[in-house]
Length: 121
Image 1 (tube, rainbow, N blue to C red):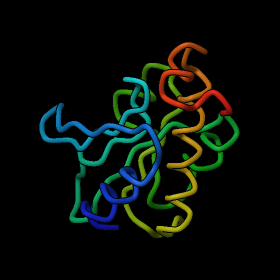
Image 2: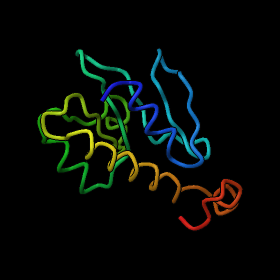
Image 3: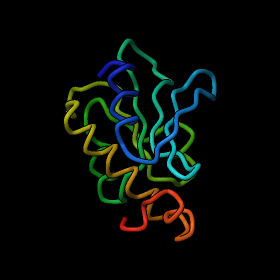
Image 4: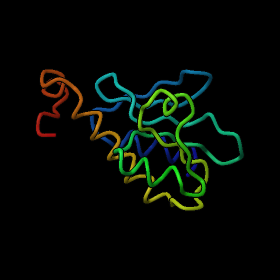
């Protein structure tokens, strides 16, 4: 997945906003809360970081090309960083990004969800 592909996909999800921050990372938010980050790569491939369930975190952290997200996971948060597509293709990454957004939406207040038109989440 290229950076343009990543940004286009995240932009296609409703009620999302984009900002470049934290040293050039492309950060996507819903209701002001982060659900996806692209950047912070140690290699040539685009590194994409996203929120997961506890079970997905435990599985993905052991998969080639994935790791607990730097900084976030070390603080007890269940975030994974896909560094390569070795064990997660772009279609699966999109599914995880959708789920990350859904998880963040569920953590928003009812008022914010209603304001964003996400009250059926």
